[in-house]
Image 1 (cartoon, rainbow, N blue to C red):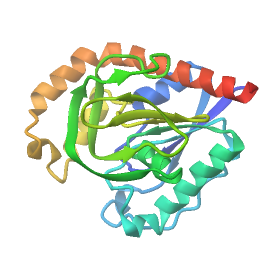
Image 2: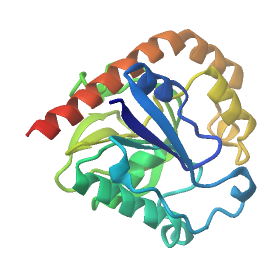
Image 3: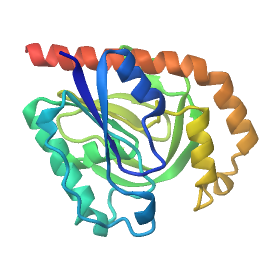
Image 4: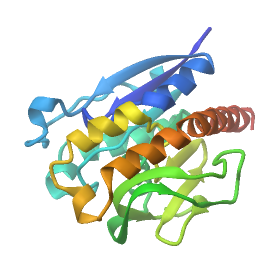
Length: 239
């Protein structure tokens, strides 16, 4: 029987891309659940009934343009999604949180998320303490917030600006975006309503060129990351 992964698309611009492909290539059936639609991007505080996490082998909460600590969102779907992630953790379901999704994992398990003094947008090197889960190499970043690792978690990657990954049981939180490919970057650049690229002095053409240069190697490392994560979930299940 095939395993099933649920991608939680918190923001309509933030899809699974390379990460969805990697799970499919590893034999997973890929389902998606949309939280905020394009029609609610400017008014995202809505009530959401999430699926039962125990119906899936892995949950992947993806990125979003909003902060985890927004009070209105915490009282609506962000709070509900954090409960889902705790329920998944308690039930032994694997969780792979990406950027905002990783920050949700941190907040759901007692860590904190706040504005970073050094936002990151582009391809950044990071230090990996567990290459089987986070392969070395440049990874794409687009974030203005950062977390403090929750109690009981183990940080496995960081760079000078922020913690980049931690593990807690069968959960893996990533601050970077392994899913990023050329097409997804074009979507994000077109939807850059807040002017993040200009604010941080990033050149769009250079960013696209760098993405094209790294896309093949990044896709290979995404497959390594997914295999490592799935192996960890399986090992945890056998304990």
